[in-house]
Image 1 (tube, helix red, strand yellow):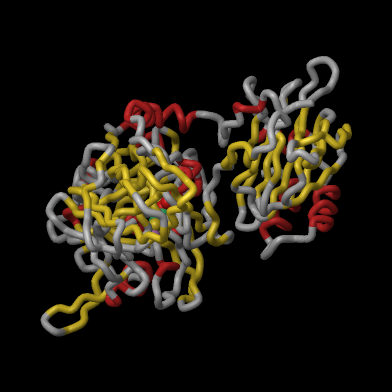
Image 2 (image 1 turned 180 degrees about the vertical axis):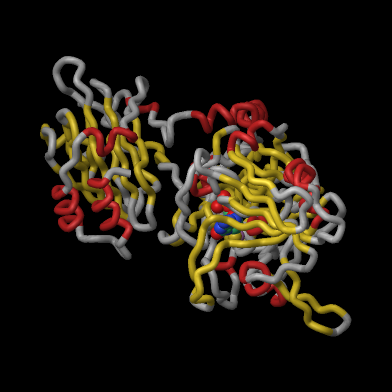
Length: 556
Ligand SMILES: Nc1nc2c(c(=O)[nH]1)N[C@H]1C(S)=C(S)[C@@H](COP(=O)(O)O)O[C@H]1N2
Ligand SMILES: [Mo]
């Protein structure tokens, strides 16, 4: 990361609310930038202007945008967000719009901003940025949005309507330092979660290190202690497993009684293809001694907790049987791409079917032991209670519980009379999903949803339900999953689970309006299948090229 952008990022990361627009502008004006400072985010697209995310924080997004000659943004506003733009190279034409008497959009005027100039806009300022320079000159601009821009309204000069909302894709930050961010479920449409949208759970800052310097030590009760390099690991046979990962605290913010920890909404889940070397292969090389009962995994990240002031590494153990399962992997790739730093690069453990906490990122050491491990992240945190023979016992979390999530419609959505499509995901830990049931009458009657993807071990299934509704009013939607072996989601959160394993059925309120007709149809299966096959390509695309194809026609 460049030194000069660093000071701006430090300021932005320090925000704990929406800053005054003129403060923001002053900060952006102060930085002196040359091409090398932002070169890594300069990517053009021949079809539409290209947005390149520099960093997403809790209170801001910073983007470098690249415009070929003639490219324009839609006419748009940024409801709920303020924006400061600095021209880095070339001349930007900013055109301002307003509502005319008949409700249509009219242009108020344009200004040309040369290199170094600054423009700001807030909330409902209607505007458009274009590259209209003579010749073939390119334009590069730097944009700060605060709070992060998640949706922009678009407009056309040909009618009075509001165009489609354009969604800006990025993870939803819950905390900045370290990053804890959710998958934006509203953007899910396919089976695989793109890496850039996949939730992140970090206890400590991301540790330094790359695959060239990476080493994995395998020691403890083994016949032949080993040190593996990246090249050693890549020589071993690899395999891939598709699997859903959920953080054990996912949904914590919905609990009636507040529980300590990251206050997750519903988005600490994702589904990906995980590729790597079976852990068993490496353990065979090392030769696990007969009395070994657990394997210990240490990440290179390190830090303190409020109730643990001594610095510690992130350490977890696995029982021998799960460690030797051929699906437990030393992962180097996620959805076909090399792991990114936030997901544990260069190598992480991956334990399919288990809560995410088992899958130790930034793996640097494995130790074979002959006792049950007790450590901070295994005995003090990430445990639940169970009643055994009248006694309360502490239990270490393992496999994920069965759970369905309703992705669309959102809470308080306004729907129409007719056919509405409910869409979501469901998973069942080490099992496959058996079925998903939907109730629109608060649990009186239940119907089976359609599974759009064949149920498979470890994998979430996409599901949909075409809900016929005859009369307007307020409705409570309930969704619950049943695993292949018949395990069902509970109606209420088990207090013995504390702030973990939150998988009870969560009601969602929606409104059906009398003056709205709904004519939903079922998913286009061909496009879903395409999505499954094309995930790798999708992830190989330039970072964050969101679709803005309807740019044409917006100009004056
Ligand atoms: N080294 C290390 N590994 C870790 C963690 C961590 O903080 N440090 N967090 C764990 C938790 S609680 C979860 S839910 C998953 C999240 O993986 P992701 O960030 O790739 O989504 O990583 C796990 N592995
Ligand atoms: Mo987690």
